[in-house]
Length: 328
Ligand code: AHR
Image (cartoon, rainbow, N blue to C red; front, side, top):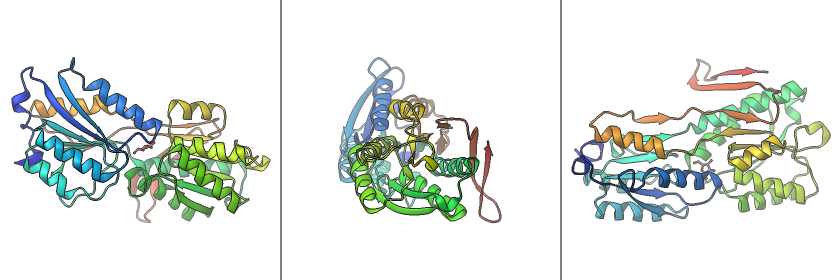
């Protein structure tokens, strides 16, 4: 019964080593490094696993090759952290036909038949984007800034990845809802180098940017370098000529920048999926049913408590608006 079965690891029960093939996107960000480490620290020999790790260097074709190798090696489980949402039907069908359960980690896959993967563990990128947008609105309102004063530069993540799609939607909804000016929008590929390059060119083109919405911390680090190199200041008050930087991930370095007010608001994206993936594997080994989608709860961290808390949900009301609670 294909990859949705929970029994394909049967010959690896009772103390046998469980072989796990992990196709990782790459090493584009600090977040990704933490995610890789979490997997490597979890799926160890001492814990009864053999981990076959493959770094796809941000290329889907490398991930497809890795999955085919895992199938040939007859691994017990495949963990896939997909670069983009689309393009997985064929290779996941092959894994399904080989009766190997596939656990999707972090970003999602958009497949014609959801049976092609067993379960998914990750964070809610759309909710993250909505929380950032609601935080920005609440912060600007508390500071007495008119929505029309906010000139936003948007540095996007890898196009077509769940993290990009959700965080972009969150911002675009905010632009629509509150009437901010979205002056520039470009992909920074989730890397520091590209974030810096994109920010440099945006600053050359527009001299009115006062908010930068980066879709991850590494892009934010690059953007901050570019802003400072251009003789401008990142900070918390556009009325003083400072540029607000918003980001996602809450890596150690990201939170350090948040404490210093260089990143005004950082929305958590938790990378520590190793133990969560192991829990799913243990449940499957025990023949238990697992949830198809497993979301991790997350927080939002800001430089100060102008906005005490923001929560949003993805359920839409009759007007098509999502529910949101902001405490200032
Ligand atoms: O998919 C999660 C995103 O991918 C993280 O926000 C980013 O840092 C990583 O590269």
